Length: 142
Image 1: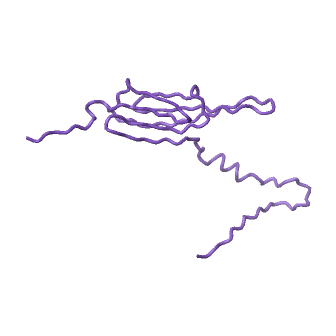
Image 2 (image 1 turned 180 degrees about the horizontal axis):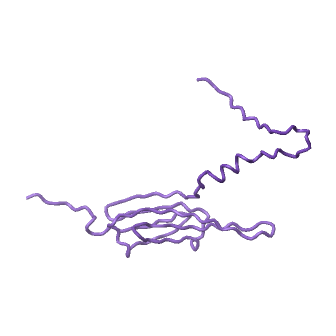
Image 3 (image 1 turned 45 degrees about the vertical axis):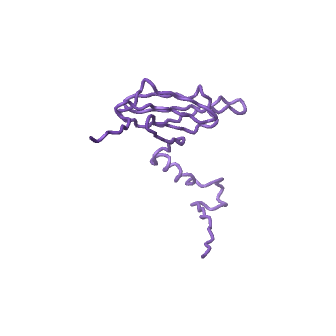
């Protein structure tokens, strides 16, 4: 096995260090260009899907979120989980709120009127019961 030593990239400025500028007028330009043209990163939380013969389960890890800050909605064949994480303000600053959203596409065989949800120890579990026509059944051969 061969080890390769990583070297940090060097930063160069267009102005000499002793020219009187505190920093180069070009510093930060690359970050600004990335901010303008790069797609916005979406804050997400992990979601797991499981299924048994009677139900489909959606589990989301939402550590540190209050139950009152979670909203669930089923519309147009999608389950949407919206979470608002509140961060208290520091040194007299107001508190900030960040919204996270995940959507899960549902099949047509979910009984939307019997969906239940529970939240315990930072784990949200949404139970989506299957309709009777979607459940597997054994067929006898005569």
